[in-house]
Picture 1 (cartoon, rainbow, N blue to C red):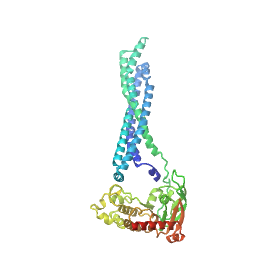
Picture 2 (picture 1 turned 135 degrees about the horizontal axis):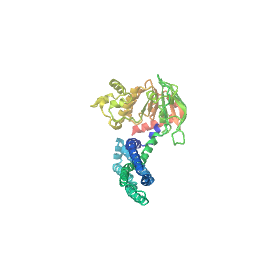
Picture 3 (picture 1 turned 90 degrees about the vertical axis):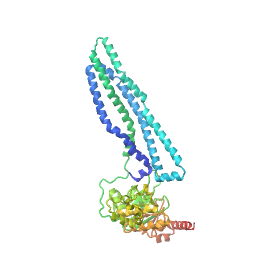
Picture 4 (picture 1 turned 30 degrees about the horizontal axis):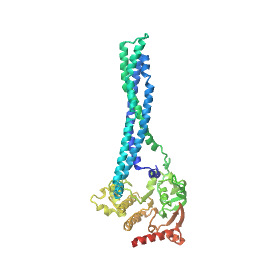
Length: 483
């Protein structure tokens, strides 16, 4: 799925459907066939034997079958409704756990004094889940009891019919009658199992619907059936008449964007919040697909390149550096699984983080903690830069990579970035304008279009949007320094 799917869907909801819903279906999928074959075989054999003994008594025995099937379907529909509600509640609870028991969730709850509120919310969700589970388990119990009573009373009906027919000259031997009722009782167990199986399958249809709902989603960013090769990428990036809108928004985010970024050059993208800066960067690695126009790398539309090729060619360093709960070495090797220890040392030295790693007792085998919270923001950022260096992509996107850092940390990270951008096609999405003065070209986005473009000196000469933004930035920095 594209990035849009994950921005609108709760992580806990996805986890619930993958783990809980599929796990609940395991018994149905693995046991249904064997139970069905066993039950049907026994029922058919028993009914055949009963017909052989006396077809009239067999018809009497089976006359209640349509009613039993109808009851089972009613029970199954009721349980299906409760089953769907139960899984939805379980997904909500999983989302609450995922959000509140992470490091970020703990910090939010503790610092805002919301720990008790979150505890009470979880308790309320647990109680609702228990209530739904009880209702699901108890749904249709009285109907099931009715079925059992009817099946248990069938021998009485057989004896009554045998007595009634004997009064009209149709006699059954005691042996035939005993054999028939014995077969009838043998039929009760498999018949009940098949009816219960029908109820279980109907109940689990809600789980199938939840799983299939995801599997049936259209893939809006699909890999090409016959991807074009890009064996020796140079890094020429172009935007040709690009337009893009997010789903559910009226106004387009980007309109008629035309850019040419030669291999090895640098482009800086600036603009007010919501002007489309990050979106423009996301179109290059195909996190989204354009609505009109095209984005090309070395003349090839990115929609014609495989995902593996795109990840090899385009590297992204964002403001939020995501590290998994593993060792430093494992996090770095996400970019290149076969990287040697010497290669790790080389990139961490270039990213100016090697000295910090070697100062740790376990060095490169140090666990970074969830989302890398054992390290500062600047250290996480430099680890992310080292990880990108390990991939050595010819095209690099820097998405406000230093905007959340203090001045001293920014200087260290910027030094690492200067090492990373050498010889690469670089698109810098900037918040602090001091970091992009030396870009080969700077564009100013406004309302999804390019309002101004040129070098730093050329834009100053225009005395337009860029100059106004630069003046505001200098005023903010002066105010911060005075404070």
